Image 1: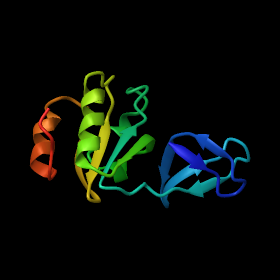
Image 2: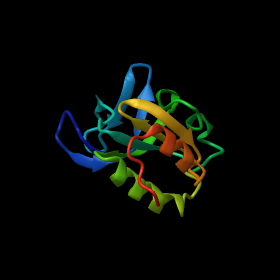
Image 3: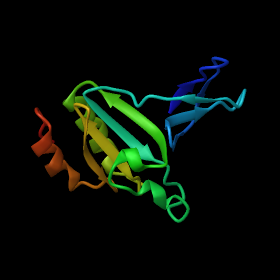
Image 4: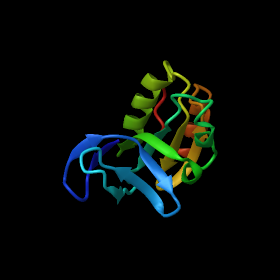
Length: 130
């Protein structure tokens, strides 16, 4: 995720981690830990850090609030924009574990496959036909 250190202002791209108090970023420049809010939007799609599934099994959970690490987060302000991005991604999922929030409520967690589209059609108003 794109982050800005709350202490020194350094901008960097890094995964966020969850500790007992919430989501945190750690600045690679000054080493300070700082709170990070999950971005808000009509549709939010987040990916767990699943680069090594054997070591990152804690990320394969149903609720993003239980995940240990979020490496990437995308915000969409329309269902059509989300659908277009999702369709591009689902063709080459690379085993990604992801979470989707719609109107602030988590509606999906899983291993990102084309079967998810039926669920999105049911949950999201205005899902475009492909």
